[in-house]
Length: 382
Image (cartoon, rainbow, N blue to C red; front, side, top):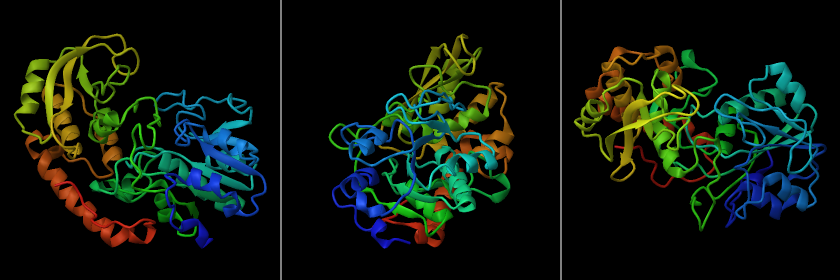
């Protein structure tokens, strides 16, 4: 491994900007490709491919994950395009490709740069695409270099650890659900010898630091990401999780529910940091498209907390009103077997506290070998 690629990132917040400052880091690259999406930008909001070309770094072609190179696809989509509209470079989606198809695509380059803004959650599919790319690269002899970016959820860990029997595209690695790793560290978990150009893991997202560019259409803000950490579990039900509204993962409901009773049931649980307000909404796409839904809005009323408890409580309270639950999908999202007590709202904090303790112990025992950055006080939510 080239040790120069894992030294201190200094004041440069992303691996992309460090590489732009020091293109010689990679040495000879041969045909160079880039796996990227719209959130892969500089601090000045210049897209990675454009910034690299402006620096005189020749790119042969671009590749994209779920949602596509241009980010225009919704959940489960990755529109194909002949060329990237910003650079004119050939563009290819790697999402939902067979192993042979994916290997054939990346074999068109000798070195593949990976610059994706991950969100630090196991069920977000960018890590799964990275795992597939690393496997295909070994098969075809393609060099992979990850341009690292900070994890917007930080180093804290929580949630259950994936059991191998429940591995899927929404969970390929045996990690806690909130894993506390950067994408480069996830790559090192898969292949300890992968090359990573480091980031500043403590760089903050916001107007005066790293701009937040939605990594996918339903995460337009950091508040949506905070909600997504738990409310995404509602995907394992017939209820809407707010996709197709102005508040994805902030609204939850379905036609015919008693919104006031749902909000009252959830507020009685006393979950820390959140309150629930009865509300009504009509999704313009996704579940219950064009139908009036009754449900709740999730409001933050205190410091960030472990939103997995909120997701479980929502599922349980929805089930009490007759909303169908998909145990198989819930198993895949959580990475553990479904048991009926997961849908008992009074048990949610017990589950999440137990998972958080296990996640912290697992991270300290099993993940330190892939850490690129010091964890002065690795913590799990209490």
